[in-house]
Amino acid sequence: MFKRITLRFAIAVLLAILLTPMALKLEAQDQSRRQDRFVAHEWGTFTSVSTADGKAQLWNPLGGPSELPSFVYRSSKASQCSKLGTLALVRMETPVIYFYSDRDVRASVKVDFPKGCITEWYPLARTERQTIDWNGFVAQPGVKEKFPVDQSRSHYYPARETDAAPLSIGDEQKVEQERFLFYRGIGFFDLPLSARLKDDQVIVRSAGPDEVSQVILFENRGGRSGWRIHGPLKGEAAITRPALDQPVEPLLREFEKTLVGQGLYEKEAAAMVKTWRDSWFEEGLRVFYILPRRATDAILPITINPQPSELTRVFVGRAEIITPEMEGEIRAAAQLFGGNSPEARAAAINSVRRYGRFADPVLREARNSATDQASRVAIDELMAAMAKPAGRR
Image (cartoon, rainbow, N blue to C red; front, side):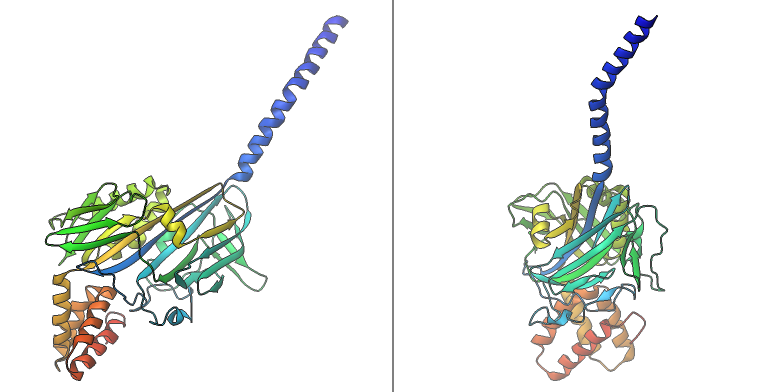
């Protein structure tokens, strides 16, 4: 019996010796996986405006009333971005960065915008014209949420509808919490896709070396909409303007599917579409496309410390096209506004308001080409009225 016990003991010791390295290796791998799960996902939009012949337009992306909550920080130096004041070629709209982790992680994020400047952000960050830096925020999965709110009906809030970890930044005096890092800006550069109108077709051209994975042509005219989807684009393609007989809902689902295919989580894709659905599908003719990742990284170099195990960046390009119909209606409204009738002026404002901030380059061109001072004054007054919230004159 003693020999059997000794043999069993020897076998047990031998197995322990053989299995211990394997167990330690498995434990180390599991621990590594737990430590390495620090994931960052970002989405945003780049908006540009061009005339029907494809010429990029300077426009005022900061014009009109702000749709952001009152607690969002705004740069007092936005008008110093260029000699042109707040006129820009591109509006970088609502990039948000989410973080996912199984534990609390203290991190920092720095984003550079070499050909633009930062105009709005939240939570508190160090900013210069072309750089924003959140240093020392903490991603806290499972912490009680205390996100700021105000009374505005802003499309800022739907971006919170994800499973990302709440982020906290601050000191003993003040701590700010949000679901994401948010920033915006205006830029002075060409995007990797251009669009022009030729007869009943929109000619889209990819200018960069990388393939554009998907292009969507959308038009809303008088509340009637239509859209067409073009597959991968490298070079040039002609897309026929759609018949205005399609509901928007199927396109929303297609957008979400596309965003998930680019690497966003389903709730992130839904949050992005919910954030922008009213603006994306308003009156006008526009092209949507997914920016190649290399283009995004060149426009917005990003540094995250510690480096995440996964970094997904999905930016949608939005190319607004000023159609002849749009230009004619806005110019007619500008002439109508020059009359003395309050009813005529109200009708002119309502007509131009359908196009929102994208009416700006048309109005400025109309002002520059006006041959009399009275017309220029009337257009100035119309542009000032457009900058006020709806319902105020």
